[in-house]
Length: 154
Image 1: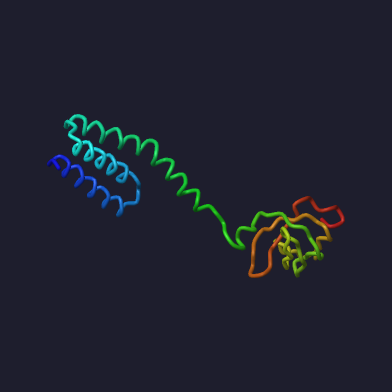
Image 2: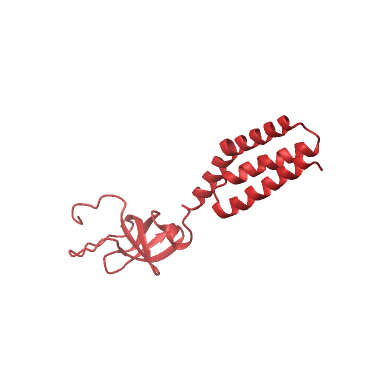
């Protein structure tokens, strides 16, 4: 292996170590460019070709690969799992729901439920009312009506 190849591979390793401490993906893309230039050096390419390959691979990584990877990494953070994934889901009242209790069906499951808003007037949502899950409190979901309530309940 030539001295140039060793230098390119050393630069790639150093940039890889910097990437591990920063987690920006920028240094990883430039490290990939340096490694590609090292391969060109092993194959006998001139210094100009090595530099061109390093620049091209680094630019492609920074401009194409990095934005795609970052998009996938940030999208994963928005995923709700478990019982918290039910927030925003529709449900149907199966036993009248008030601020004191009731029951709804979410998908195929029955859940204890209560109104998401504190109701001093003791409003009760009747059977078959369509509601939306506002939150989860232990084994009870809090819900609010999806459709406007009839005048006699509002």
